[in-house]
Length: 295
Ligand SMILES: Nc1ncnc2c1ncn2[C@@H]1O[C@H](COP(=O)(O)OP(=O)(O)OP(=O)(O)O)[C@@H](O)[C@H]1O
View 1 (cartoon, rainbow, N blue to C red):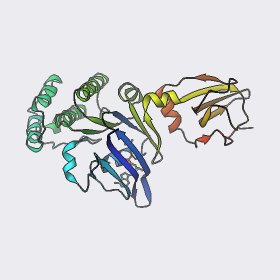
View 2 (tube, rainbow, N blue to C red):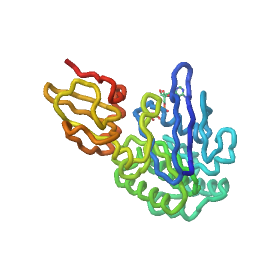
View 3 (cartoon, rainbow, N blue to C red):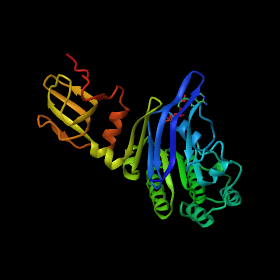
View 4 (cartoon, helix red, strand yellow):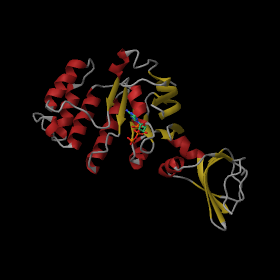
């Protein structure tokens, strides 16, 4: 498996606050990976280090084996759209595309022009006078036109209307299918993640909580419902992610590692249920730890 992006014990500290900590994961080449986590989880911090805009306090990040802040040549392989889609506001879209063409050896002029035309974006208006969503579209068109091997997108569709969002995600999937691009996109929109992404990284409290192939992760987790349980081990359960109890019944969200004790009814989960369970506060317990059962 070739790896597009890898981090090893990556950490970033601002003063005494860790924005990201002990972060170790890989994104295999060719995947559309989602980076999911609550506000302040460290997603932007991670993406900024991956594109060399900031340096780690601990550990390292590599893109196609290179460290972006040491070997700037790898930057030509990376496309990045920051959360606030910064662009030179006095430039028109046409001027920005011209600049992209001059600065990037693999630039696809036709792709960029066609995207802007398709979206009806005026090429001769200063981008500072476009709406926030229109500016985001210009930035996204430029990122795609760069034909990057790794595309990093920080909440790329947050400012787009629902139709534009769907259209953009379809265009992104199409562009990736036709090329050799790996994508890592941060998003709070779990329905989009479920529709688009085949790989998932969940960050919470500045650490990686869950990572892997989306289909594998969904297959490895179940919701179990059964008579009120007194804690302790359950056959077939590797870890308990979340537990809730009524007087008569317990509901567990678990990672499975074999046939489940038939005392429990097992239900499949959606990716959204799974992500939300990992984002809820509380520690994951192994099946053999007693988990908190209220009296
Ligand atoms: N330049 C900075 N100086 C000080 N603290 C910072 C700086 N940048 C980020 N942080 C802190 O680091 C933590 C992670 O921030 P980051 O922007 O990476 O989170 P995020 O997951 O992208 O959040 P969001 O979903 O809200 O965009 C937050 O607590 C934030 O306040």
